[in-house]
Picture 1 (tube, helix red, strand yellow):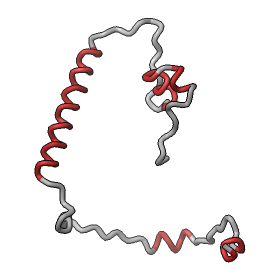
Picture 2 (cartoon, rainbow, N blue to C red; picture 1 turned 45 degrees about the vertical axis):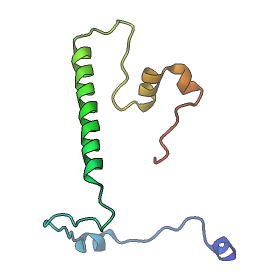
Picture 3 (cartoon, rainbow, N blue to C red; picture 1 turned 120 degrees about the vertical axis):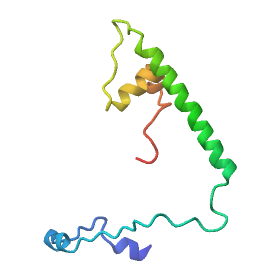
Length: 109
């Protein structure tokens, strides 16, 4: 704690961008991925279950898309813009849920 208290809260490095541009290198192996260590690979049953669940969800999404493409929105419905996260929360969950704070920002932002 004593050492930490002596450190500044913010430190800014003085980096010369010209040096970074010259020393850039990319090392990518095109030979493929290494297998997971013994005991860390997902089982075949788990993989098949994931594929099955994904397929069910994809089919459901496609059914909903087909249904809603043929429907006309009421004149009083305004769709949020694709990048309007708060607007979509209100549109999908309702104004009250969003105001009460039931839906907040993602934890990993």
